[in-house]
Image 1 (cartoon, one colour):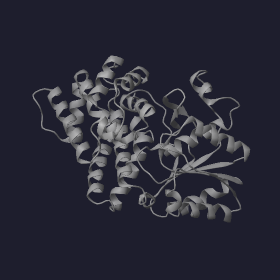
Image 2 (cartoon, rainbow, N blue to C red):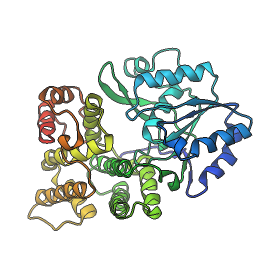
Image 3 (cartoon, rainbow, N blue to C red):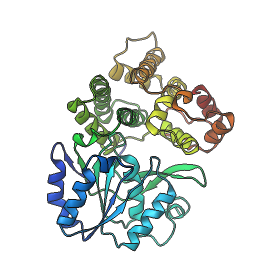
Image 4 (cartoon, helix red, strand yellow):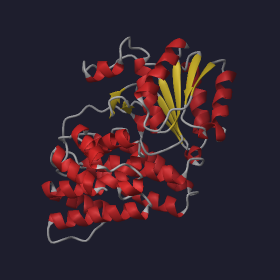
Length: 386
């Protein structure tokens, strides 16, 4: 394993009634002005918005409303939120929703303290923000695990770049599976596949020898697969929802990444495809993963074969590569079984040569995977996804 320093600083309130426990403990530290950030109308339809506002007002806090955070949050939305936070002297940001809301708020938290453009600050000057408006998260959509870390993905619509930012690390997070009951079925399935993707992309980095982080990773992958199937069979299964919500947290709280150099090549490809087509993140990953892995497996057959055995319980092939390919076939079959798209056509995204060439030319090519892809090979992969 690589040398590491590990810290797990996000306080998690998990399970039924966790919001009450969190607010009782955290309200006194939230200051006088709280920005309540959220996405569309589901937070209000569920009654959770009114519950939060009532709790804040009962505690004597001013509530600043910041809604309308879209899926694949934009840089413009970040700047809008930062201006509002400065204008209202916000002391604390409570983000309620899923990964898009959390990512947007992490960067708002940093931008509100900076006197310069955070894109320039991070990506041109290569600096890391150190001052933030503190924030907490209430999870209503599982999958991204974004409440567990300080990373964010923001889309700049002017430059067509959907890229990484560093923002605030949430102080605490509420994970109550009951809050996911108002979320559409397909949104939760695509989120759960994002969790599986996080696990796979962590595993397929280095080192390639057996290690404790990978052993735990396999267990989480098997748990995700089992509970996705249980959820598809019965969407009211609260045990499955609970497991998937905690799987999501485990995939991104750093535990599985200890001592690893991760490979997030599929994510980098999907980010750029999403920047050009505004398609769903988890569903896009479902299309991309099998095709990328068919290109990578010949360069790391032993690593892929172990994954095939440990996660998919496939029969041994004559060679490690044969076994690896059986695992990739099992992944592709599972994606179809879950009702996720298997092509860009099913996803509803543009797959013209012009768009795919633009994605291939601008996607970040990672060095952590079995091999570093070329832009030409990436275009070939994207064309196979049509």
